Image (cartoon, rainbow, N blue to C red; front, side):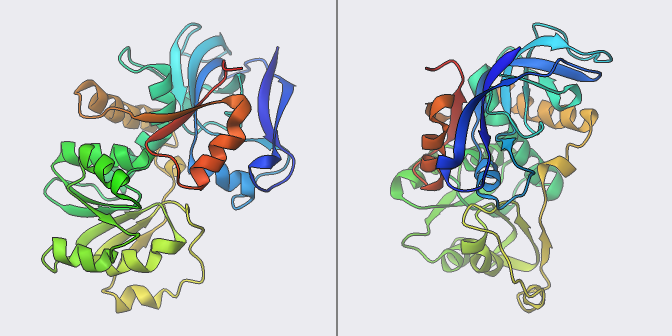
Length: 328
């Protein structure tokens, strides 16, 4: 079986992505083959494309997609041909029409979640799940700071925080994005293009600051994030949208209040089929209760994946973006 897929042979900008025809491996022991209906676009895809995160070249791009199972390898018990499924942390290479992946990384979709929503929510939604329910388990009543609140992860975080009874202060880059974050459940927003984030956090919290900051932006927000934390607060640095944080003097954690720091990744929180299924159930239950809806603001043909990367990198996107294999 052949499929079209995006690969890169060198690192660089969106122009290094090539659409090629390649063989789809048959489903071996513990694997399934999926006819993909929608593919999720995430900042981590740009890290692998640029070379910030390393993977042997040539390689594909993308980690999440949704579709229909068309073949099941020996030993797979929880899936069958015809199942509607999604995955969020499969081997790199989701930018493809059809692919074969380890079955343990694949979950069945409930009836109320369509392919596009699944592709848009799995990695981002599971990211919020591990941030809010595992890395720093929010109990309700806390006031927290979440950067990039109008992005794909951010809008899910706004809704999840509201469902938990948590006051989420979100940072955004424009009045339009501020309005979007507020509509999705943010308690307050800070426009970092014209407001001082630590100063505003102090005002909003009556000088108390926050116990936890969730920062997927990285280099450009690092110092401000630390300045928003209470003594012994937790800095959760989970992404590098503005570039990686480097050259850190750990002594700064002491001078700013004996702060804690973690750099988590999804793979370490959902590293088994059981852990993945439990996290996905938490996410899908939120959808079923009406507490979470996925806003897909951009759709691109897989042929036009380079334009999708350009839009994402230039901060022109809001909500989620999906790539659609069937578009010509």
